[in-house]
Amino acid sequence: MGTSSSARRNRFPLILLATVAMGLGVYLFTLFFAARLSEGPHTSFLKIPAVALWALLAYFTVRLVNAALFDFAFRIRRGYEAPTLVRNIFTLVIFTVLFVLIFKWFYSEINLGALFTTSAIFGVIIGLALQDTLGNFFSGISLQADRPFQIGDVIVVSQQKHTGVVEGITWRAIKIRTFQNHIVLVSNSNAAKEAIEVAPRDNLNARLIFFSTVYTDSPAKTIHVVREAVRDADNVSEKITPIVRIRNLGESSIEWEIKYWLEDYAKYNDTDALVRQRTWYALRRNGLTFAFPTRTLHLERKVTARPTTAEDEIADRLSAVDVFAPLSTDELRQLAMATVGHVFAPGETLIRAGDEGSSMFVVHNGRVQVQLTESGKSRPVAVLSEGNFFGEMALFTGEPRTASVVALEETEVLEIGHAAMKHLFETNPSLVESISWTIAERRAGLAASAEQATPNSLAESAGLLTSIKRFFGLR
Ligand code: CMP
Image (cartoon, rainbow, N blue to C red; front, side):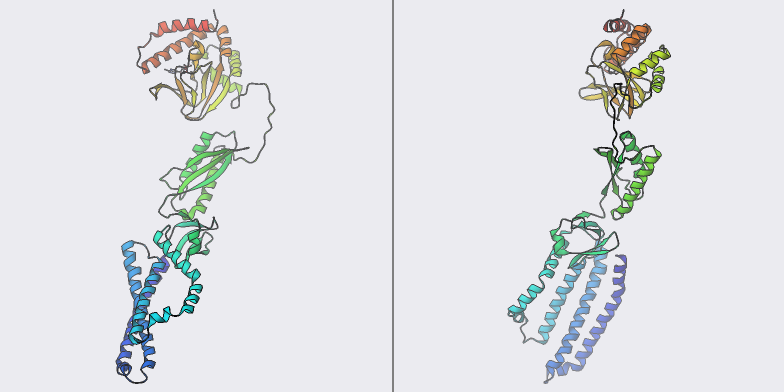
């Protein structure tokens, strides 16, 4: 675009020179032949070069005005180039008017209007010949008036067949430069009938990129890793953070889409490729795996499923839980075997206040928040992390869950059921005592949060001890 407008500016002195030369020609011609033009038998013969000279003068004058008006005035005032179609219509109309005036001046006896209107055959021929041209012309005018896109925008015409940057709209066609650097001309009348997808140059346009990961990879981790890898890639807009989301749980993979916004949409092929490349490296670095079509055959076994952790690791974790400190290594291993692992995504609710509960949980990885819900709003009471436990209140007292527990990040918990605890209580009577202390303290915490009277922890704990023993049928 820059080259064509500077080329036009370079032509300006030439047009100016031609106009001056034609003016001079007309002047000299009239000077020499003025007397002969008004009298004598050769008058009509001389009129032909006179008309031609005037017509040329008119032509160059119109071009001069056109250049001055559109190349300079329009650009300076509007900041962008005048559409070719508008320029052409302007030139055509002014030139026709001038030519008719010149013709009438020299041949006042000939009726131009009658000449055109009486010739019906001429009209039919012109009409038929110009059918397509006129269609394009009027579609071009409506495109200019409507301005659905501008020079520099990326458009897709004819159901994805032609994609490229708009280079110009003439009276006949829209000129698109494709991403293979070819020029495609879509006639205006065709374009008027098609659905055209426009990605305006001054708009934040988005793209979607797809990839798949295996089911064993954590979604929360994948989202974090891919988003961070993509957001600082070249030409990815900083104004909106890319979105990484699951689009489908496929047969053999989790199917993902990345939505990102571009600074310059015309470079989307390169940027798509860069985003894919960044994704590959990011997955590789973080031990995440691209999926390929696989089919896994599972043989059912009657063993409690624990998909994510090994027994020793769990026994280690349980030994770090303060209330389980008195347990022997064997007891810890037995307890580890009785636990069931669960993974929760950030924001997922692990326990809902008011529900029935018959198990407690130890946080293996991650963090959870204990929340009280008051008049529809949740209020945080405590944050529990690795080695902390929760859910013991309902398990040991048989009452409904006192609070909700929500994952703050991807969290893995170990669930311990009623039967496993009963077995432990029978062999470790001191365990009941330490747990009843924790429950008493937590009740006090809840009461303080709910702005109720704080119960006496000591008395509370003693009462609890009795009711836990009764609940578990212990002596
Ligand atoms: P439960 O009542 O079974 O379910 C909600 C759990 O949140 C509860 O058991 C406790 O384990 C836990 N909880 C309640 N209050 C507190 C608190 N103040 N501090 C820590 N944990 C709590």
